[in-house]
Each structure stands twice: as structure tokens, then as C-alpha cells.
Image (tube, rainbow, N blue to C red; front, side, top):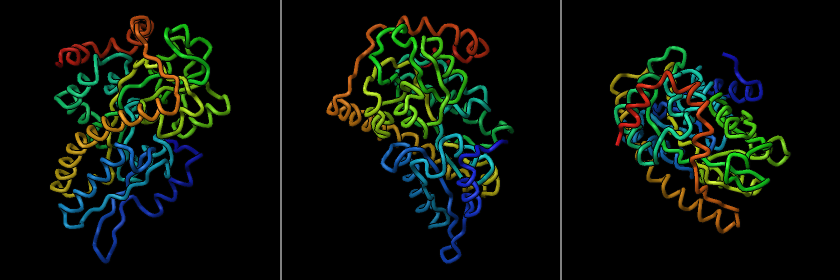
Length: 330
């Protein structure tokens, strides 16, 4: 595995201090966790809450130590550190995991879910459980899939103009997560998809490397992206759940009872994060309105759905049975 050069020092530091450290006085095993978002972000808060439950239930045997706000790199770098055991766990998008565990790419398809409620029903049920197991069973990934987390609905924002039809994207360079499906989705919609890490987005827009990006309201606000890209168009083209993953290298050293306890608290974190998420979305939209962000609802999504048919033809055919099951979930 090739580790990103930019964050090699951070990875080396994480390994030097250890992803799992033991405080001899208290005999506590510290499990280091990472996220690109700040401490008050739903995904971060849910993992912190999970850690507190674990610490209490084990009388201090385990303690989760959170490194938020890209302290140890972006999602790609954090995932690499989890894979090699330099971190115990991280919350990541499906995108980078899909490059290793192909089955989860079904969730990366544009417009795959009818609604947010439909997406939640899928990840809460048998399909969601099967996908987490596929991550855990994949020897290439070297990860344990713990739980799903909401990341809302992704829409386009840019600094040039509102997007009401696919043609409005023509000529615009739009940052996408580093997965070919996402890049090709933007290309199919008429824009120019540019793969870029989350840690590069603000400067990328500010300096003109890209004209905009796409994401959910909390991320758009939390990272102050509305200040450099004030046009927010509710295309709602992607609704991609996120994943809390654990290092298999570390996991296999833990007693089975402790593994079961971590999985239990992770499942609770899935629903804990959801409640926090819904509150965050409402607060974020209120902040955008107050800041004067130019928000427009896309009234007719049919042209967007038609435009991404080549992406479905290329990537969705092999998931035909799974797509039928997803569509059948009520």
C-alpha cells in the first residue's frame, strides 16, 4: 500500500505514539480515532459518546481518544492509518472504501435511494448488515465494518451560478470524492469532475483550482465553504451513507467479548449520530439562510436522473439483484 507523501509525517507520528497505548497507572487501553470534522460534528460526537460508553462499561479498560478536524490527515490518509494499525478507527465515506470493497459501490450510484427514509431503512436492515460484513471479510481492506452513519443528501455548490439543469454545470470544475463513480457522475451531468481530498476543497475553490464541490449542508457550513462558493443548488444527486471502520490488525488482538461490546455500542452510535444529524442539518440550513447563501431548489430532477444513465449502465449492471432488493425496501 502506498501511503500519501503529504501526510507521511502524521502517519509516522501516529505509529510512533501507537494506535493503541496502555497507560500503566490506570491500565487503560487507548483506542485512537480520527475524523475530518470538528468535535461538535454529529459523526465525531457519536464516536466520542460511543467511547464514553465503552470506557464506563469496561471500568476504564478502554478509552477512545478522538483526533478531529483532519489532525491526522484527510479521509484517505486516516483510512490508510487504520489499515496498517496506526489508528484504531475512523469514520469515512463509502467512496474510498468502495475502491477496495466493490460491493459497497452500489450505494455510490447517483439517485439510488428514493428518499432519506428509504436510505435509512436499507442501512438499518439486512442489506446494511451484509455490507458491513463484506467489508470485514475482505482481506484487501484489512478493516472491520462497525456501523453506518448518515451523511445526508449531497448537492452542488459553486462560486459561479445556480444549477437548475444539467447544462448549468457545463464548464464548471466540481470537486468530487476520490472514487471513479463520483467523478464520472459529475462528468455525465455536464460538469468536470475533479477528484480531491476534503482537506483541499476550501483552498481549491478559493484559488480557482475548482469552481465548486458537492456535499451536505452541515459540511458546507462547518468548513465555511459557503463563503467561497455561495451558490447552493439542491440537486440531491447523491445520498451516500458513511462508515465507521476499525483496524482489523488491532481488532484481532481484542478478546471476543470486548469485540462484541464495541459492536453493540457502535450500533447504538449509528442511531445516536442520526438524531444529532437531523438537528445539525436544520441548524446548518438556518445558518445558510442567515448568511445570505443563494439556495435554490431543483424543481425537476428528471433531466439529472436521465443524464446519469451511462453511470448506471457502466457500474450498476453487476448490482442488478442487489438494486432490486434495495428498491423493494419500504
